[in-house]
Image 1 (tube, one colour):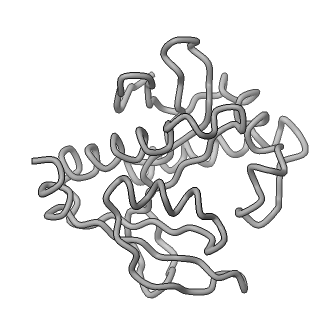
Image 2: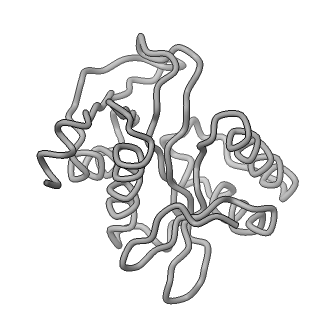
Image 3: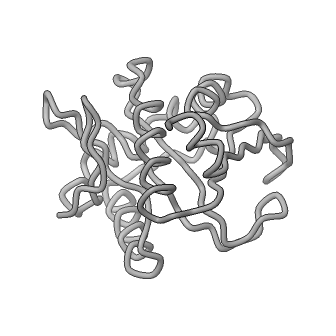
Length: 180
């Protein structure tokens, strides 16, 4: 299994079938899905399908969301990473999106910001991307704070599925100015 990034507290690695129970714990929680369309998973098989879908993205696009494992406990705590988005979103197509999602027990520990920074480093320094984008439900103040702490700048709002979202952008130039 490939490790893509490591931070002081976390390992970001490929999602594997053995992560199904962790993905189910994450994605069956209604609180986790509050700003994600309120569609939590209801079966372990659905979590296996999520993993198959992400692994297909690895094969087709060379990138996809990664499992986040806490070094101290070796526990699956969520996922984070870049994804190539091929469908039009807010006037963009074929762009790299940063996303993250954590089991509720791990909220408020700074893991999202830590992962966002590791993913941006990977995107700009390993993939040599020019821009990375992110979006957050306009009501999700915590996610907006994570993105801004990672260096993203707000770049307008848009509606997706009748829900107002904030759009965020960070360029390689901005990232380099923040991280020398």
